[in-house]
Length: 382
Image 1 (cartoon, rainbow, N blue to C red):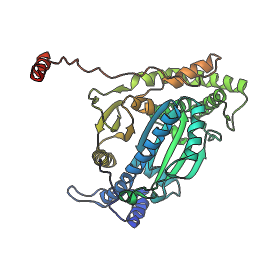
Image 2 (image 1 turned 90 degrees about the horizontal axis):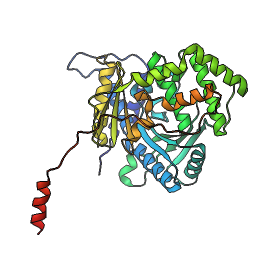
Image 3 (image 1 turned 30 degrees about the vertical axis):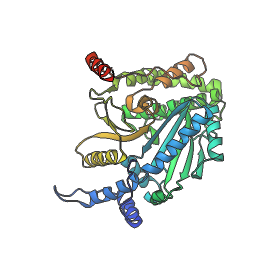
Image 4 (image 1 turned 180 degrees about the horizontal axis):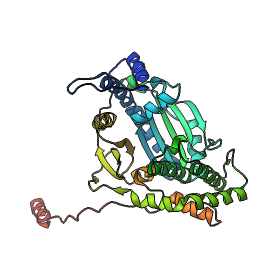
């Protein structure tokens, strides 16, 4: 049985670390365990203690999808330390009260699947629902659409009592909604702007808001506030595309980001994705949560110390083929979004779901087994 990280500090230390993470942390001399490193040790321990609850929600949701025969992909990931710090600075949320330190994501083929899964989760689930954010039926002002459910982890066996009460967020969305969120993040990364948090080009933000409304229209969902009627909306999308060369830039993103040569082929449960400043992507795989949490903590310390300029995220997926489909922004894969943007510009409806063929890494060198081994085994059997 895999061993999962447990919190090795008291809750008072976690709360204090959360307050300290809001400010500037100073690194001590080489060989010293500075105050900054101690704060990160406590914060990492708190984050890592969400792995088992996160995996429980992940596996239970996967089971529900199979039971309902709903097509889609599942993924799970702990929140990046940089994202934790930003949220602590920009809101009144405390570290020990954060709802999404552990997050799961279900990306389903269509809106009918989303509705069916949410109905099943509300009716029968081993963990309690704390709160829901219905961003599909009531989209955010920027056009973001996804349904968020926060669970309270209920321990069923004594060995898991130490994880009781951990909060895990499940995001449920369609592939079309996911392509929108992917494009927002990918364009922000490419342009060096934080569009995801509304910082950057007002024209790009407006384009995404309008395209989200078009996606909502074809899925039969509310388009949200602040967008004009459809004919005016489409005309404005065409105008913004012409001014921004949006389709061209999105195509450039698809080709600029490429896989690193040291992509690992071996399978594993957990993948550490490292997004480098030069637009290369490195992937490391791990079988055990204790391994990946230690590697993530070491890498984030290097990032915090300024030794490297990268972004790192840990992801759990059910199979390696789902990695790119569930987190395409780290691979510059905005194909589904740009295909639908072209359709809108050409006067056609966006397609409710279209899964483009995914780019693949170098194939393995063909291995030719030695037939003499089989012959020897056959002789031995006889």
